[in-house]
Length: 68
Image (cartoon, rainbow, N blue to C red; front, side, top):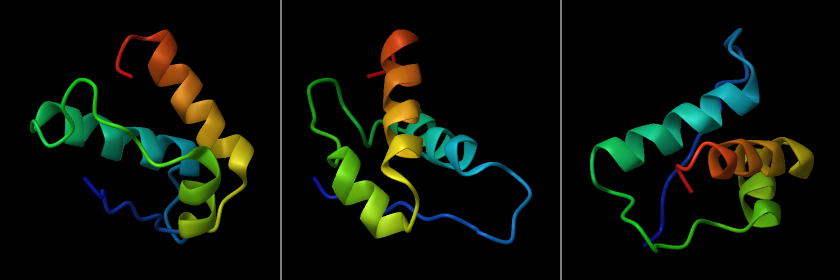
């Protein structure tokens, strides 16, 4: 499934927090189910116009916390 993420670059909330919150919402609403694939770090970073390290950090943090 293709997920639509967005970043509000005018918002004071850090990019990594915005991305993590969107992933949490997908999980809690059942749109992201166990075993489903997320976009690659590179593709999501390019789509959002952020550094790949930002997306990698979000994925790593969510994996460490058991969400991904």
